[in-house]
Picture: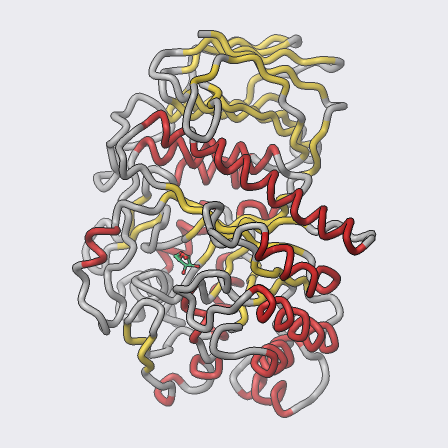
Amino acid sequence: MKSKLKISKALQIAPIDPRLWGSFVEQGGRAVYEGLYQPNHPTADSDGFRTDVIKAVKQLGVPLVRFPGGNYVSGYNWEDGIGPKQARPVRAELAWKSLDNNQFGLHEFMKWCVKVGTQPYLAINLGTRGIDEARRLVEYCNFPYQTALTDLRKQNGADKPFNVKLWALGNEVDGDWQIGHKTAYEYGRLAHETAKVIHTLDPDAELVACGSSMYSKDTFGKWENTVLDACYDDVDYLSIHQYFGNSDNDFAEFLGSSVKLEHFITDEIAICDSAKARKRSNKTLNIAFDEWNVWYHSSEADKKQKNWQYAPHLLEDHYNFEDALLIGSLAITLMKHADRVKIGCLAQLVNVIAPIMTNTTGTPSLWYQSIYFPFMQVAHYGKGIALTPETEVASYPSKNGDVSYTDSIAVYNPDAHEMVIFVVNKSKNPVDFSVEVKEFKLGKLKMATQFAGYDIKQTNENQSMKLTDLKTINVTEAGINATLSGRSWNVIRIE
Ligand code: AHR
C-alpha cells in the first residue's frame, strides 16, 4: 500500500499551543499517594515527593497539569489540604469511595509543579460548593494584596501569590455520576456567577467551562447551548472529555476511534461557533480537551476493590501496543485541530490510567507503559506550527466512518529549525510512505524512529518495549520516502 503526505509551509493550520500536551493528576487511587507523594519511599525528597516520578514526568515533558480532579474535585474542600499536616482531617472521599488523609494538598501540588517545571491548572469544586469557594480559593492563590486569606497563605509557607493562570469551573457537571450534578441551566448560571467573582479578583484568570463529558452523552449539544448562552462571555475554553476502549477486541474499530474524536471536535467547534453567532460576539471560544486516554482494561478489577481504603489500586490499566498506536493517532487528530484545541490533558499521569506506573517498594521503582512512548514524542516534538496535511491513502469502513490506513501530519518548528513528521500505520502490512514538499526544500535527516514490531496485546511491565531507528528511509530536498512497518508509530525529524 502507498500513502502520500503533501506539505507546504504556506498551508498552516495554526501554531500548536504548548499546553496541548498537558496531563492530569486526580486525588484518587494511587495517583498522588504512592505516585507523586510517598515520604517513606527510598527516592523521596525532603517534601516527600518521589524523585523517580519527578524525573519520569520531566522526561515526558508535560507543560501543564490539571489538579485535583476529576470527579474528586466535586466533593473537595481545598482548606482540608492546607496548614500543618498533622492537623489535616481524614475524609470519606465519595467520588472513589476511598479514605483521604489530605497530606498532599494545594501547597504540595504547587511545590511539586515547580520541581517538575510544569504549570498548574486548578479545578474548582462546583459540585458541593460554588461561588464562595471559588472566591476564597482564587483570593488565597492569586490576590496580590494583604487580606486574611493571603496572610494565611503566607503563614502556610508561600510568601508570593501562586499566580495560577488557568482554572476549571467544575468537572463533568453534565454527568449524573458527578457529586452535585446539575442541569445545564443551573450550571451555566453558576459558571457565570463564579467567573464574575474570579475575574473581580484576577482579571487575567483564564477559565474553562464544562462541555460534554463524552460524545455519546444524551445531553450533548443541548447542554453546551444552554451553558454557553449563560457564560459564553465569561469563559475562554470549553472542556470536553473522551475515553476510548476495545472491549469488543476489534483492532480496526478501536484504531478507528480517531475518526470519532475528529467528529467530536468538529461538532464541538460548530456548537461554540453557533453560540458565538447567537451572541454576535467577537470572541472565539476554544476547546480544552482536558481528559483523554484509553480506559477500559481495569474496569473488572475495579469492581472487586474494597471501598474506603487509602490509595487503593484503582483504574490501573496496563496499556498494550494497540493502545499506544491509538494514542499516536489521537495526538495527530489533536494537532490537526491546533487552531481550536488549545489545551489537552492526557488522563492521567501516574498510576491511574497513566503512562507512568510506580511500584510501592522494590526495584524497578517505576515503569513506563506503552503509551508513554508516543505521548513523550508528541510532547517533545509536537511543537511549532501544524501544517495542513494533504493526504492520499486508502481507507477502510468503520462504525464511525471511513478510517485512513495511515494518519499523518507535519509540524514546522522555526525555533528548532526542524520539520517533524508524525505518522501512524494502522495496516497490518508495511506501507510505502512518501512526503512531497511544495515551495521549500528539506534539509538533512536528524532522527527517524519507529515504535513497531510488537504483538498488539503486548504490555510493558518488563520494560522491553522501546523506540527503534527507522532505517528504511531516504530523504532528499524534494521529499521523503520511507517504508513503514505494519502497525507502527513513526516520528521523522528533518533539519
Ligand atoms: O479520569 C478518571 C475520571 O474520568 C475523572 O475523575 C472524571 O472526570 C472522568 O469521568
